[in-house]
Length: 186
Image (cartoon, rainbow, N blue to C red; front, side, top):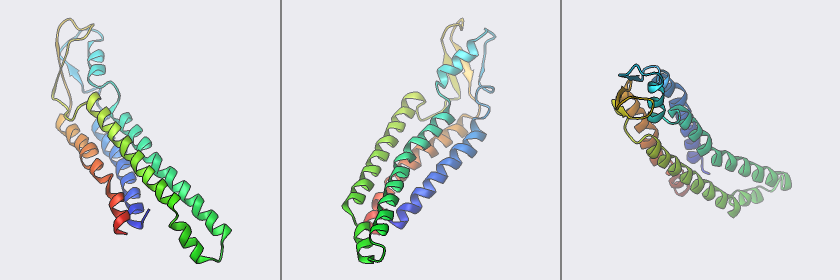
């Protein structure tokens, strides 16, 4: 990976962690307590919230950060291992070390890591779409047992949550492909 590619990986990882841990926590910390349904039926609000959000959005995003960053971390470990052994094997041969840095195995590993990371990113996009969609509605209608009838439930700060959702899944997948460009530029 080139210097801009490494810089991009670091910034993207930090950016995602900041979005999930800091901004996401502020937006979603009151999720269930501020999910109000117009019913007094015991258990109805909990069942409706589970229908609205089957998995905690923050936990889903935290899992995404962990899983999507794993190929990059494994590539860095592999590349460091290869480069270290090249310096140990040929400590004074700078030409040999440069040849090691241009090793086809490293390039192949780099491209595999980019492909795997892209596949994981797309997988989480599909998961996001099927679990939550791309918008957080103001009103969620719930018709599950033990609710006596269709119940209207109101979501707190839906526009704020929608904007955060767009930030996580609108901007970032486009940025996933930037390291590929840096490899050609650098």
